[in-house]
Length: 526
Image (cartoon, rainbow, N blue to C red; front, side, top):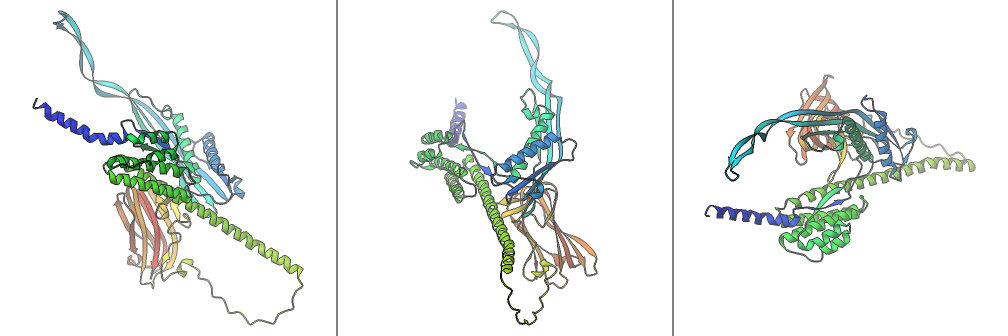
């Protein structure tokens, strides 16, 4: 008895420690689906758009291209402000290039050691008073079916908008293994079905790149006692009534934390029912985030309280991007209207002049002072204070940067639009500068970078002419392999390069390894 009693106390203690978490969310979780919307990576401006989908890969059929074309056209047409037209008259030209499609389903048999029946033996049974047959078990190598399914589709979206050219990645991969007698999903049942699934996913991604798209999220509700009535209302989609039920009274400790969590879910649901670029949408998300943070502060040990804060942060990034897109579209319309008005004024003036008698010739005016010629290099014209590389904040897209590899402009909650170099292969961001620095006391290149996934390596390659006129290249190391973290500023002295630069010709930022974000690329001359 002495040896059993301590174990019983330990078991009861463990049960007591586990009960609060189980009480808050229960063994079977109460889940609701919230209808979030994701903004496009590339906002379309104007009123018309054309869609062209092509491929030079033999594995990609016309039927595959039609699937992507219809999906993108349907997504664009859903926006009633856009019309599909021919490329020659379109404000926006969306081109999807499918570079390759691969699907493999391999079935093999492997052998694993299992504890199974390996025979039988006879033994005497005292109760039955006779010999009986008994199964014999042991370890034996058994055949096991193994299915390996892998595939990929490489697809890229290039969009010509009135604001310039922008790009997005629409490719995807699939890799899974199925062992034994398990049910495999439909896409893994054959290579043709895997191809169809990959093309369908590429079509979805291409459509999402240029249009607002559904991005549903699953949220869990805490189930503590008095909260259950509100949960039933929420599961039925009656969020106002659920909020009223959860707000009827407050509690203390863990139970109040559970109530605040559910209130946060309600505010999220309210937000997703409003226009994504509206102030009301943003305000509801702020209230959701506040409720989630209060719940976590009351019960920091609850693992389910942390994830919704990240979810709302993503939604706030979506809202910020949508607001910037709306502002960009509004500015474009205003500028277009101004250009139209300016173009029509000379015609009205000509008509008025034709109807008015010509006035007497005026006296000769003194000769005008000669105009100062504009500097040939727009960048060097602003030198002396701060000389940012053009569009170093990427607010208006990628122009005039040239991208090699996989890189796109993405929204950032605090910074606006930043450049994202995809992980894996090398991505290069290049821009010519053409600046004389021979007589300058200082030339500093600066940028902000953030590794968001993996281990990112960033370096800057500078092309320049030395004092003798020879073309040189030098590399500056920004980071040799940082793990994921926050934004980090970096500066490099270009005049410290050897041989010393006399004229800068080009700046290339090269990212390898992990996924890296770049912002505020600037060149400062003194």
